[in-house]
Image 1 (cartoon, rainbow, N blue to C red):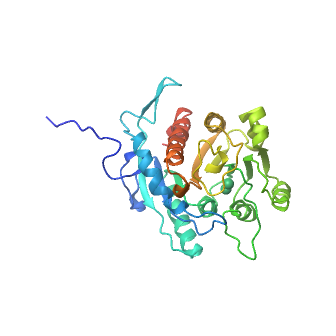
Image 2: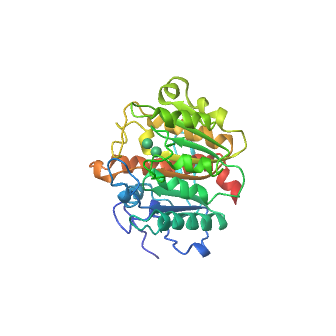
Image 3: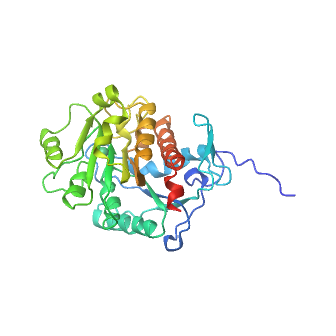
Length: 316
Ligand code: MN
Ligand code: MN
């Protein structure tokens, strides 16, 4: 008889949730494909997010996923992610100071994941990487984006620089890659009036953190038509720094974890989540590992919510 394995969370090679490594995307056979993008050359303040994919993978070992068992969600009193195959596809090939090479590689890899019918889950990296990820969805039908963020990230340029982490949604909008953009969690004293007005002129729906705190997840629904295809872009600074301090540009008054959970399940209940990213974790400012742990759990929670509401099952 085979000796049963203890498989402790701190043992083994760190892949996302201890999932099998699958770097040959041409033959990818999975329901969920996790891809790291260790890129932070587009950060205007404190760099370090390039180390997030490794840090988040390490913490995700706490949520080791066995497709035969899934995990037990005590609040729903049911098992989630049972029969769902997660693969860790390794990292995109980033080249420092070369966004063209890096973003090109990200778009190619995400497009391959989509060709193989898997749900892409992309771990940044700074928020600039959302543009090349969403670019891979081009020509595949209307996509409604839900961005969780303290910031609008709708800047046109800084002295000609167009691919900073302040600009991804401006690039996405001007290339017609989104049918709608809803940004939730905006707050702080550093919102540029020009960027804010430009986002509103584009038709973006902006839900301030203040209004989300007061009125809850229903505030995002007007920007997300029922039954549509949604893309979730989760900037960890949308959460409150008390639970996610390890990020480049933290802002007080962010969402609580409970509010994030409600947000994700409200969206997953409304239509089909076809992809997501989680960005801006900065392990240099995360000495306790809390931010990486919250990031790993957020991803598992998103996948669980999507699965609970049958989106992943429907894809198969
Ligand atoms: Mn952002
Ligand atoms: Mn932000």
